[in-house]
Amino acid sequence: MTLLTQFVEGLDSGRVKIVDLTQPLGPETPVIGLPPQFGASPGVTMEVISKFDDKGPGWYWNVIHMGEHTGTHFDAPIHWITGKDLPDNRCDTLPVRRFVGPACVIDVSREVAANEDFLLMPAHVAAWEKEHGKIPTGAWVLLRTDWSKRTDAASFLNVKADGPHSPGFHQTTSELLAKDRDVTGVGVETVGTDAGQAGTFTPPFPNHTIMHGAGKLGLASLRNLDQLPATGAVVIAAPLKIVNGSGSPLRVLAIVES
Ligand code: 23J
Ligand code: MN
Image (cartoon, rainbow, N blue to C red; front, side, top):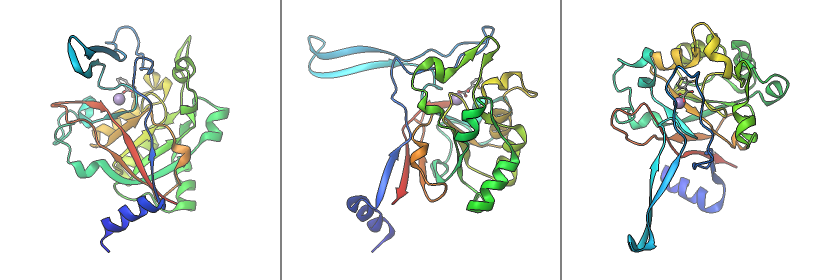
């Protein structure tokens, strides 16, 4: 049997499962809010072109309108000023091979339950690696926080008087993952790949700054990370081929062996 024949047999027998890491995408989908001096990303709106009516008696279809960074979405290196001049840095030019890689799932849900501003430190990565082995080159590093269980928009965005509060990566961890481990990218359950308070950090938004400056990718608003093993899953995260796109909503799938 070839590898791919075995793979399909695994799907048919149930030994291989596909886990959907994607939020529903619609008008209710929560969108990041930046300070008012910055441009705002609009939420999803949909308008019917026709629905079995005079505009199209036999067919139903819609127009959709949204920011590139809406719902479960992909961040390309060109999204950030540090990655803007890198080669093959945008949705339409990234090599497709980069969209597929092994998942390393770091579970900090307990820490986040106690501290919504939790930042992943290099020591947490070291502890994870002691148990599960070194994060391989080309990995998707997924931060399991259980934040996606906040299914109402207000508690998901968690905006307080001093701005949003949600977990993320310490700058030194982003450097470790991008430079020393040479990962493909990071994925998070929160609305963006930086912590809620990261706009106040030095530099602001350090995870975006470091990851994209190193040509790495981002995935935000993931869910169902609690259905993944720490290692052994394969993630497929392929953005729309938007010409000059900085990011894209997408369907993120994990392939898991039971
Ligand atoms: C622009 C500015 C800051 C942030 C973001 C976008 C995102 O989180 C995003 O979706 O890339 S933090
Ligand atoms: Mn984004």
